[in-house]
Length: 103
Image (cartoon, rainbow, N blue to C red):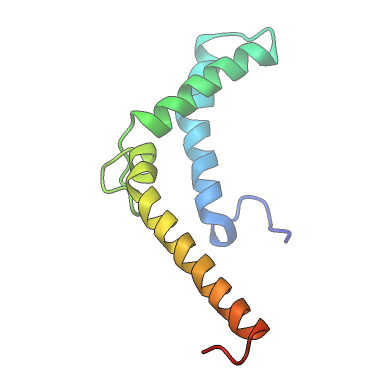
């Protein structure tokens, strides 16, 4: 799928994250330091991203003031249960398809 650049209507979540990263990461770190290598820049970006995901509370959908990592950890069991239910349902359908006499 091809989307037009900078069109939040078609890819709002990604565009919003890029804007946040630009405003809160790049605009700040490039004012503080001149980078001599991509590796040095990557270290600072990784640090910002870790903070963004693990220490900074979010007000976005499903976060309710928690960090994205906490939201993920809190919902892992739900995803696991849905995945198990989906696998069981697919197995039941496959089994019934292969053995139509069994109901």
